[in-house]
Image (cartoon, rainbow, N blue to C red; front, side, top):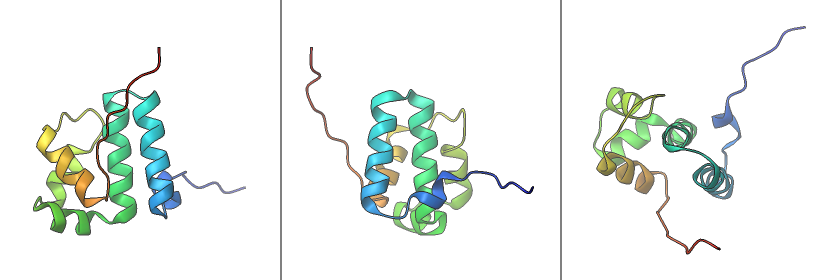
Length: 94
């Protein structure tokens, strides 16, 4: 039996699915998980499109959103805007 590698980006095909995925990672993941998730979303939308909208090169995006990367906050904000996201702060329940 042949198997294929699971690629989450293949399933991020709507704004709602993208938002649900990123919100789940933000709630339960760590910094690396969030950066990785933003990278998956950027791949799902198209790295070329994200590069054009952010003014960053594709290689820079791949590097900034790779496992173990420590991108600048400005880079994350540019990518979030390009993927149609925003940061929102809600009070934590006790």
